[in-house]
Length: 332
Image (cartoon, rainbow, N blue to C red; front, side):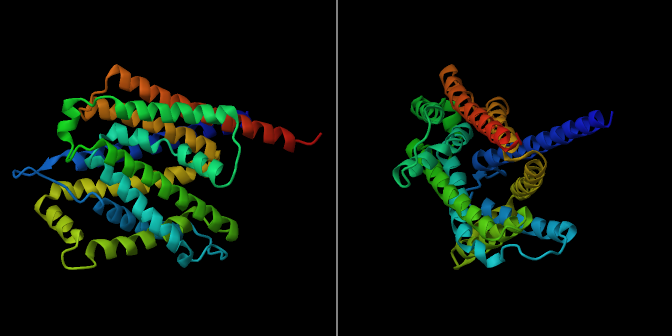
């Protein structure tokens, strides 16, 4: 009886995590698309300074992580010092800024698809730099994702979607997305290195360190000289309070979403988190197509299916690998 109750509780917690991640990040994506395409106020101005979103996100997440550490930290030492995140903070500042700026040039569904192909630069770097050999199924996953993104990029985008973009330019938009992935790869590798050296580092320590340096770098970039774009962004928010409210909600969604990701990883592991976030991206494209007026053709939906088939197969391969490792660990 107790086993059934604990199993039911586990299912409820998982459902809670799925609902939290989906609702936070799908709504954040909707707000991101709104801020990049909407014309605010009677003057019909666009919010041109999308990189300002990163600074706002850094500040909110910095405050949030500090509060969480004070509330939940046991006070034990041994975590990574805040200064160790300085290099990862640089790439974590530049990478997301490029991803957000890409929305000036390509649609939100195209950006989500392009950013879903993180495995491509990872495998390229692994093969060319480190001489790693991957299995045929792993290459098949990459082929499906790369093929889906490439064909989607070559297909004609609807005139309705193009009319909403600030400056349609597909090569530049996709280029920014792939540079974002490259910087993300360095960020993840640096974080892994820090976790290896300081094994008592908590998720909140990482969140605090990354957002502290992100706040510092973005403040210098946004407000470091009299004509810096941060002043224009603040002035725009003063003139259009609706945009300021959307930015605040965007940042709050990011902070709440981080909570659910940490909860999912701690209770169910990284594979469950990867599965939830991958399906979330697919739902984000559906929501964008239906609610934000970004209609996709049948061929484009075919490309979406290709990409998420590759991602789903990759998750399945990871699950099989975990099952084999668990069998080896069992005593004879």
